[in-house]
Length: 100
Image 1 (tube, helix red, strand yellow):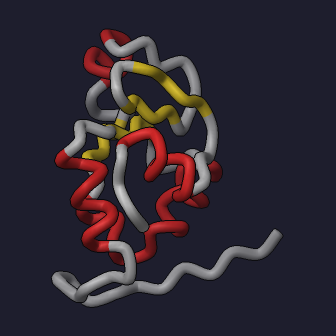
Image 2: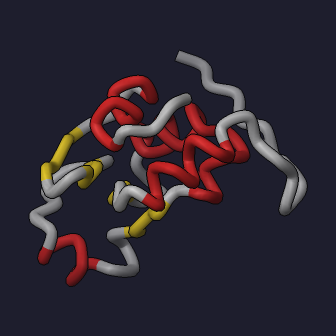
């Protein structure tokens, strides 16, 4: 599978900015790493809007990831529940009560 990543200038608006901001406001958090290909896929789904996601890099915040029971990447915490693996944006929206 070939993935193409666009490098957007800092501060450029993304397609899902409001959606990503809503997820963060509702307490959704993505736990992952820079080297994880599944995390890269999840980030790519948001495009430039990923900058608005509450993201914890487990390579640099291992204690926080351990405290939250993260055993695989990516892991989303939404509404006190954990969801492992790449999640469809529609599912994240449904879980957090955010419209895409």
